[in-house]
Amino acid sequence: MANRTLTRMDLSEAVFNEVGLSRNDSSQLVESVLNHMSDALVSGESVKISSFGTFSVRDKAARVGRNPKTGEEVPIHPRRVLTFRPSHLMKDKVADGNRRK
Image (cartoon, rainbow, N blue to C red):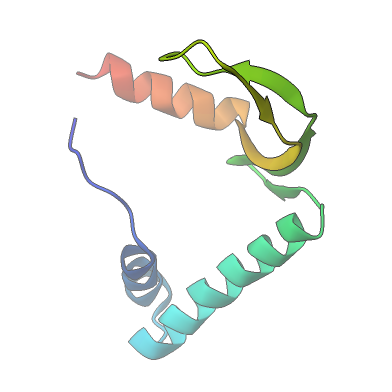
């Protein structure tokens, strides 16, 4: 397994190669899509990308945690967390990638 990370630049380059937009336009397009997704998530909406998965924000309640080193109880404040649920097609594609190795 390659320890490589897909970056914004990689996405822009893929748009440039596949669609044929200029590199600058490709970069702006990727940036615009990511901004729309971020804005939707910040406002509490879900982002569903067909055949890929769903990003959503979940509210977690306050609770009491424990410092594992000292055993001291520590309050954990309520917070919002980002979750991703992959589609069945994405799960199958990843599983097929595991089988080929």
